[in-house]
Length: 246
Image (cartoon, rainbow, N blue to C red; front, side):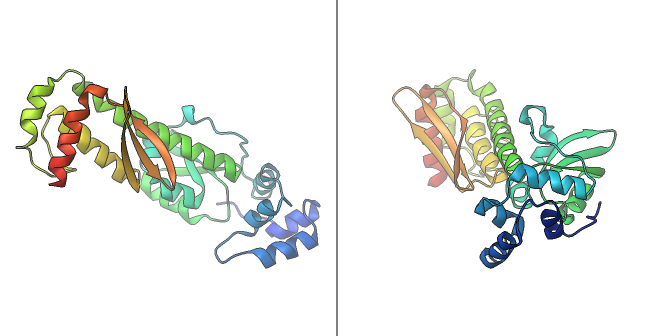
């Protein structure tokens, strides 16, 4: 991992991007565990894009101003819990010839990159992006991955007869995550629960409206649409949840 030639504060002062007074105020406002750069950004004394460019230049790392979540490698993203990605402000972008490119906001926080090197069994190529850009890309990428995974569970559901499904519900095992039964309603509900665990969701909302029903996850305080099963499956899904709840 590259190292900075100067301290972070010296970089900002030398480039006249912040004043000594701003640094003093930031040190006074800084809370335990909070980065000085984050305090300066909150104060409005430092622009995030400028901060990221400065860090990239001083650490001699590539800079990327934007992240297109549609170009991300979903297999790489799925291996990293969303909370870990947010906490360390990083996101894997792509893998080429045994090298995984990862966007990071803080080049001084090199330990997570060692974790990723072991996790992926590959060389890690880091580039710097603004923290807010990474945060937005994380939310969109994991939201997209969750929706895609859950929608895949609907394939068999569309072709099953509800009367057959309903008759099987009461006799099915209640293991939420490991049942190998192929009944589509059971597969759907088990899959939603399994996906919620993987996404570290704190809540699962099954919301019923006049003409539709929607399954949503709450992750880190934010609500995300996961899938929208056909309204006609509402009674069977409700019955399955009641059986699981006893």
